[in-house]
Length: 251
Image (cartoon, rainbow, N blue to C red; front, side, top):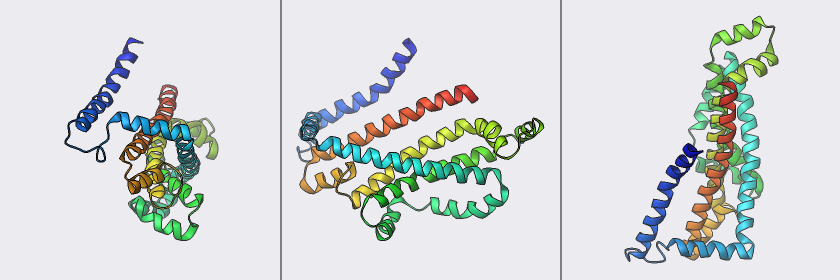
């Protein structure tokens, strides 16, 4: 318990220091209130939006888009990553193309998604799924490809073939790497979500960023940035707990 408290305190040291520096910079007179409002103004802006019911709505919409897109992208990433990692012909066929598509920046997909899918929820969720897919696919494929070949021989010696070999031997061995890929995919999903909401949205935290910039509400803009950081950290912490259990179980 003492070690855990020390780790928590060490993790809070930098955020608290940054908050103090933020307050000092805002009150020093170097920046105007419209350029850098103090933390208290950001807190009050959040309280006002929360009391109106607007803040909870924006957060819920963004979280919903991330969860749906993450689920779809992670499923496809796991499926194709397993095929590429286990079968050489599939790797030769899909690998070069997927590696090329992975290098395309997130904002480059936005106009195409809007053209193909319109301005509803579908392009936003699709972009989150796209952002999630590549880290999960890459990690799963690499994790399965680099497994010790003796594990396959051992599984076959005990009568495991096909799906049984994959589920009972190979996936458990690669499980820590797979969960790490899911964490990377979730972080990338948040990045792609903001890219989509910045351009074509009337709800969500990305929309709140654009709207606050257009109206000169820097306090709301900083509030949206802080909320994105907190939501990203909270979701990553959930997968981090899963990763620790997986590592304890399968390492």
